[in-house]
Length: 232
Ligand SMILES: CC(C)(COP(=O)(O)OP(=O)(O)OC[C@H]1O[C@@H](n2cnc3c(N)ncnc32)[C@H](O)[C@@H]1O)[C@@H](O)C(=O)NCCC(=O)NCCS
Ligand SMILES: Nc1ncnc2c1ncn2[C@@H]1O[C@H](COP(=O)(O)OP(=O)(O)OP(=O)(O)O)[C@@H](O)[C@H]1O
Image (cartoon, rainbow, N blue to C red):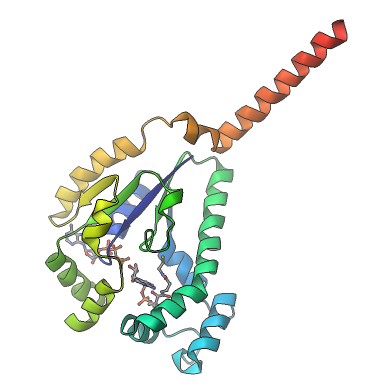
């Protein structure tokens, strides 16, 4: 199985690229969705976060007020690190579980869309790594427009992550999403060819079909040896 890492900066266009992959039938594990699920009311993550940040971060229905928690943690690095520490084990196991389900289905190529792939040191489990890059001013403008937040809040969010130019140096593949969607789509077509090229044997051997092949080959080998000795 090929486990492709997809990362970038906030609002650099990861979801846009994820949607392109999904439209080609390639499964995507979205870490933001996993992170949302582990913070739902009554879950282990929710209990830890409420214990640490207090009831004041809750809405009337008991769910976490995400906008409020976002304002708190993106303005205060210590509180953000605390939130990261509390949720990291739940997010990692949630991602692992999604990968296992896709492995059981026999998926050959999967995409892990993880904003904090490098920060959380999850990059060692993915190859190749795609970084969606965008120039800093376009990133700021897109973030402010999409989330309807003022410049200072948008800058706080951008600065809460490893600098995008540094992430770019760690990529195997870079998609420059500073231009139009058509220009990005054209780059994606090339990336798609690379990502869906035939699996290397190291990737095949860890796929479900690879494991089945190894088991079948071993069983055939054992039977052949038994037959050989029973004739002696
Ligand atoms: C702080 C929270 C409640 C804000 O929720 P909100 O709905 O406003 O934002 P959302 O979850 O959609 O995240 C939007 C983007 O913010 C960035 N981001 C989210 N969490 C973090 C973080 N801890 N550090 C840096 N950037 C982050 C990512 O680029 C993400 O794509 C939420 O982001 C959260 O629970 N974050 C901690 C979990 C986490 O690390 N998520 C990232 C998955 S790897
Ligand atoms: N090439 C583009 N041209 C114009 N707008 C774009 C382009 N790519 C993305 N956008 C817009 O920019 C915003 C951010 O894109 P997107 O949501 O894909 O980023 P993201 O990296 O997934 O963000 P996050 O880190 O918050 O999950 C969205 O509103 C999206 O519609």
